[in-house]
Length: 509
Image (cartoon, rainbow, N blue to C red; front, side, top):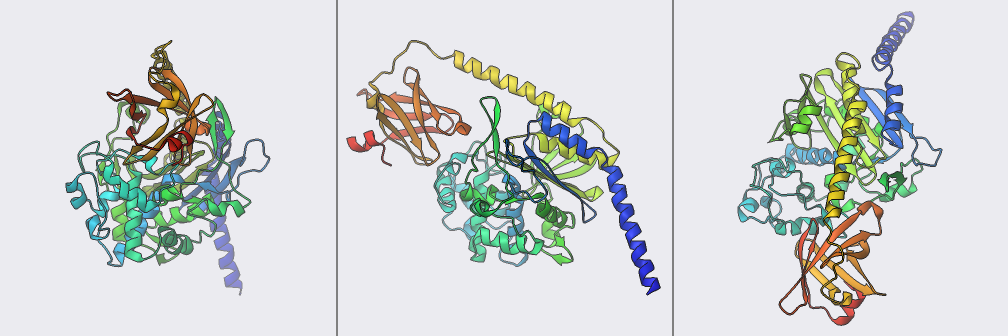
């Protein structure tokens, strides 16, 4: 009994010493985070740090919603956005472990309906290609963003998305290919992607409140509200439903549960003695597959980084001579980051309720600096200055664009003549309606707004959801002087369909 008590006492001293060591190593971090969220105007942030398979830090900062006193803590739910991609990669890895597929299987071996714009790419695209952003495609995100299309519908329509560069020639970030990967996982298992995430990842890691959809959040009490900068002011916005982009980015979680995901990664696919994925296939996910060119701005900001690549669901780069494995996530009103420095057996997760914030990336570097040799650079001050400079440059470009507007012009036709349904085989329909002397545009369930004349036959759509900003639409007339096509900024040409007068005026879809 005495020897047992002495052993317990020794253990307590060891753990206390470890905790004290971490407290010393992370000294000043709380104050740095508090100062940074104020400078970056981030309402709330959750942060967890894992070291040597233990959660050594898990805290919340700020508020769940501006104007509310409810504080963020380690259990507050956020969207993790594209940090979800690594979950999809791991799901496929588990199915490959079971012998149901191989990384270099062609997609059409498992989805016989899969088709790309180029028949050669259709024939040669592999599971590895789906996950490594080398499809040759530009994003095409308006297929799913604000859309009512299903995941399968979106993947089926990708056949109309023209490539921007050659297959496997360069890195090109692609959400739709991750939807295709999710469809493959469903075909291999007979289970939905959501069920697979729950059964193969959430359950064994004890991630009991994490979700693959925003729907369960309505019944939860500890949920962060998304925020965005609108008209120069940080304001709350609504949660965006992106369930149809699930395998690319729909997971919601908190830093306490995401810390279990980091532990799994740092243990190379093992959690609490239970192997979730083989070490060999985990190595595949952390191996470089696609080279990412580092631009001059990144070279100036991050001189410590000499190369950057993409694995399967993870960005891979060097940082001060160490390997860095990470993936961020951004969806309306939320910015997230999961990152690891394997040589130091340390990883972290940062979740925020602010749109497109650079705060997670700079905090990652600050924290990893603490594990290397101390505080290092003031990343917050440096990157904030750079971000403000970029914002000023963007404002200058917008001002130059606005100044190119030709004043005192008139549309070629009476406004009601532009009303009608305009179709694009990739994106679907844009419906232009006329009522009370004004034109309006509707594209899917999210994009609804009024059109204001810009110049000639160009109009600017001001969407009802301020988060969506404005979009330029330009009509082109045929030889009979009738609207024939509609060019939508960022989406291309839509051809006018021969609707009945009632449909054109009423805007039925």
